[in-house]
Length: 256
Image (cartoon, rainbow, N blue to C red):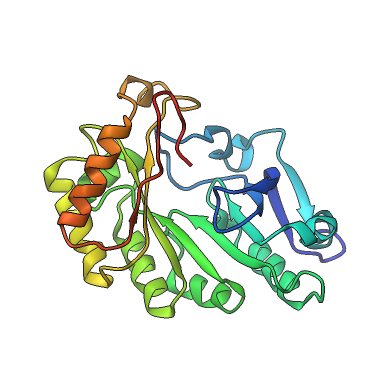
């Protein structure tokens, strides 16, 4: 809270127009702080929390955020909050989405979060009434592989995906395709089996790994080729998933 009692968010940055962070043209809010430590993170400056937070991050009250979004509203489909991990700032995030839904000019904007899925059930219950959808990264279905990639297990991630699917708020599940790491036969079979157990038609988005912006460990990995991404797409379809999106890539391009 601010001194005046306004809910706050610690903001690493914003994008006033994005076509790759959910449907339509979206305002994107990048929040500071994450509880994962992924070598492949493309926004590593947003990981730090507390004393380790990026010094360029700024604290914004709900009123200031609304004032920034309002003039853009006629050109927007919605707002996506990402990070870092946005649900670590649950109270401020809920306050922002509540204010958007209650505003005559902004109420038609959809509210999405791009999340690692570690929020508790009680936390999801707090924000679900003002949340239109969550895009959840399931970094790996195998618990040990997930821990090696993120520094944390994936039980709560899977619980969140199940809860969101039951609530009709699971916008998509995302898989970062890393050659030889997340695209092995065993991992894809486990990953597809989990998603298929929810609903074979759950939207799945594949993302191609790129070294740009990552840390030293991930820079040793091969970048994902268009052929490799298409192969994973076909494997997941063969494993029973029916709604898998793999963006078209050309050599040297960056997937959304």
